[in-house]
Length: 397
Image (cartoon, rainbow, N blue to C red; front, side):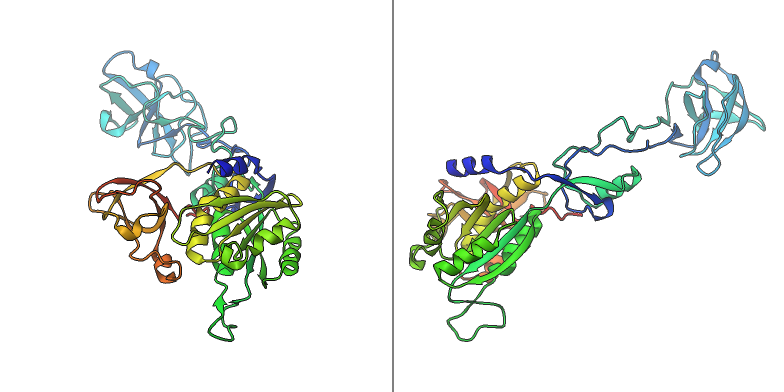
């Protein structure tokens, strides 16, 4: 992990661009949101009542004459005179000069006047102008991910365009003679290149823009040619060719074009690994071809890189109660695919999937998090454990 910490330090947040606020869902703010208007625009009443000047009530009881009315559709735009009151509906503009709003239940109302039997409290039942937001305040800071509520808020602030971090263009390449696109397998030895679907989906959920390079055969020249095709992208992700069984194809391909290759290894059943390198300034993440292993490596290493590029703040660690003790099959690995649920008390519970085999894709599809095991080999039911949800998506409503 120390090598990865050094890697992530070298990743820079991409520059900003402006997008229509209506298209900003899932984008990351590059600058604070600052409204162009105030809300409320003027002092408004929070309940039905009478706007008064508290200084006019110097004794109890006090009678005030009704000077006029104010509501949301017909606001009172004048100034409240001494010794008077303005009948004001909830949401209506509070007249200039009024500093308190007395609720209807606390006055005795006559035909053209009211009688107060208690002193009004300064500022009571009044929402001041700009209390929600104003041009003088910054509402949301850089790194905030735009959800549907923030999109609506931006429109209320009269922000038609928003400064957001540019999405990284992420090239994706699958490597292997055995790979075929869905529906194109010619014999039983072919394996569907599901990574060309899974990885792009993960890239989109992480805030990136996928660029599919397709499949490269186990040819050094072809792999290097595809790597060169990633020019103009901000990141390249490859899957396959990282194991000794694959003849270290990716390492050999990378060694021909870069001398800076770092190996990142997680303790897994299959003993898979990944490489990190650069080509012409473009970071390259070379993941294992096995879907389960590549899923774990993406969650642990690739998603943080993309999040750093788009300026997303690091999510706090999350914990859950272990739903069953780890068995022998679970030990010897650092991470397990698992399922999160909420029990009757509202507490998160996590249970490892019944099978962790790298080729049982249905179990992988059911999982919604990683259970962090690492050195804790004797985890028992009821223990608090760290989990890494797959739901760290920027597309959230």
